[in-house]
Amino acid sequence: MKMKCEIIRDLFPSYIDGLTSRESNELIEEHLEECGACREYLDEMKEDIAGENQPVKNKEAVKPFRKLRQKTRKKIFLTAGGAVLVCALLFGGGLLYYGRSWTANSEDVKMTIDAQGGIATLRFAPEKKNCKLYAEAGEDNTITIVESKQVPFAKTYNPNAYWSCTFIDEDTVMGLDGQNMDFSEDQVLTIKYEDRTESIPIGELASQALENPVAQSKDVKMTLEKDDTGTVTLGFFPELMGVSLKVEAAGENHILIRQYYNGEGEPAENGTFYTVDFIDENTIQLSDGTERELSQEDVLTIEYEDKIEEISFSDLWEGSLPGNAQDD
View 1 (cartoon, rainbow, N blue to C red):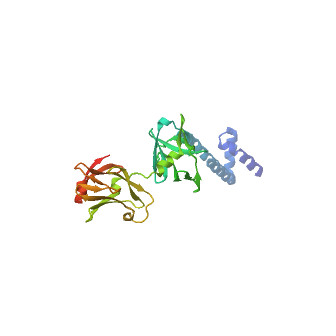
View 2 (view 1 turned 45 degrees about the horizontal axis):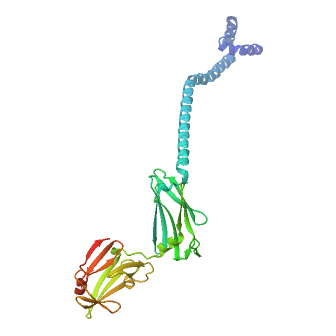
């Protein structure tokens, strides 16, 4: 019996798959009618085989969808990778294009000099749109004007380049370390462009920087006072803090109002005065003590940077300031 059950059970896999012969099937089925243990064994084997085959069938059914998902995933990866590559190329190309710089041509640069208060400032403005400039300092008072492209959508506060120096006097300049250095008459500032080199005498910059500019009329308050002796006093007071004013003779009955950046204290303390001494309505006394007859056309000319103002001597005699102003 035991041997027979073992033989029968060995045939079960082929029996389940339908591979056994008709005679073997009859032998197996006769044995199953008599042996309950083998019937249970066969049922368990069928359940096991069914359990093993079911995932295989599911895998076969899902396989096309897996292939589809794999293809879709591959396309997504390829598309994303391509997009990243394109962005990298664009970014890298942008860095190469906008990150590079070159020595500017002189025709693409407009240079101006602002010299006042002992400071000379050279401003280099680009003539082309979407460009910015740099002033690179070199040795022996040399600067190179470098140009580059402005990055799109990036905020650029000022596309201009600047170079400045502070003069203590006509022979002394303050260095970057704050120490004073003497310079000679033959020393020049060299400005290098791509197409040419320009030289500016440093002494010329010093003269411009140390020359006190003529004041703007809006920055000056003028007053008039006349005393009992016939003396008319014109007062000129700065409207700006840190500025003092002086009257400079520019010709007969012609004065300039210059401003200095060494003023301390309140503006009222930094004013300047000009007096006219009247002998009578038609006569004034000059500084050397001589007298001068006046005509109806005689005027006192006051020159500012932005305009010239004329005041008739008859108005001065009357103690008023109507005057006539004309643009410079």
